[in-house]
Image 1 (cartoon, rainbow, N blue to C red):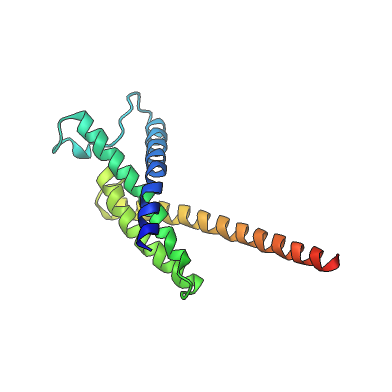
Image 2: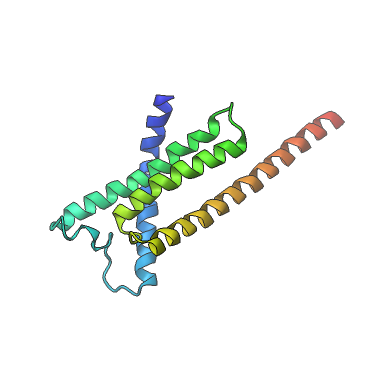
Length: 153
């Protein structure tokens, strides 16, 4: 299992970097920024070198990708019910995500900021969950059709 975790940890990194880059560009456009800034000014009080900010930001984005790829392994635990898997996956993912998102400056550390970020996360999570359920139903229907066709021949 530890090999699978490490494999997925490193596999998720480029996806996280891509995700973070896309989110930051969309954010810049939505806020009518004329100058692209990878991260918010969260690091300004601590780090003066823009290259250091770049490296830290990319590492945090990579960790986001790793988070999603590693926590997907929760769904491979056969002895757990689907509901248990979803609940554990959700709470593990949202907890770690909120820490990384805060470090990236994606929300302010106040009630409104935290609730807004959690609501956005829940909406995106629900959309992925619904998509997975639709895909699973399609897969089951396709398998059933193959079995039906095989039995008819």
